[in-house]
Length: 327
Image 1: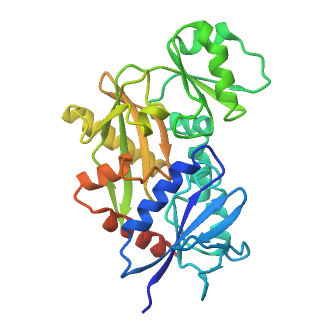
Image 2 (image 1 turned 120 degrees about the vertical axis):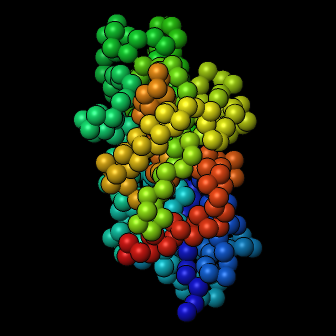
Image 3 (image 1 turned 90 degrees about the horizontal axis):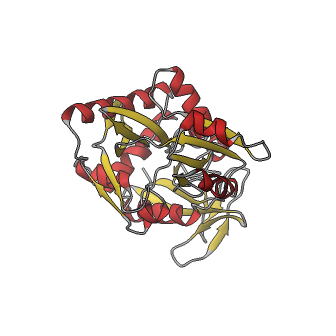
């Protein structure tokens, strides 16, 4: 049998494109070249291209996601999706690949779309009894009833774009005068905004994935930001400590792992997800779940995977085999 042809999709149309390129590059460097023929694919606003080792760009044929590698016409057996943000994390690409009948490593299109929309995801999970912070939803162009917002969520609070990642457009509001600038910043990323009570506690992030039929919950990472919160600088520019395993009690550990597993199952996820929580007085409050989490070497999921005793090569191989098994 020949090698499995893996197209690694990276890039995207959002502020997270550069971060996605890092994730895709790590996957490409980590996959076992004896088992897999590896094809980096850049999904960009200007076009979709397979980019060869020597930097040649070959356009993707959108009718079947095929491309040339310079000598051969390639139709991939499987897609490794590392596109953060739109169109890779919000369900668009997953739906397209599903229509083409090409398996891919992240969750299905509906689960991706639901979890990418923070407000909708919180609404669904709250109905299942998952603890979440108090929140207020506002759309661009709506009147902004400041007193009502503060009555609902209190101060301090977080103002977030509803559909974006890597903390782009997120602000912590400590006093009322900061609310309007925070909303303006969030509206630059999305015309829908969510305002949430700032919970006081330990922030942790938990990876969950399927290894065959078995659901694996990874050891939580504790996030200690030097900044006001886990913002872009803290995430990517070294302004935070990410401690794996998290320094939490055994009770809190079991509670947050159980909740992360519960959410994965409630939303009928597949692939790798990373759910973020704040543990306040022993209770894990759900913040959000990411269905194409960062996979660069300094990202949280790779740290948890190594802590669990897997190499990245093994882990990425498991995600590919699971995707192929779904087909």
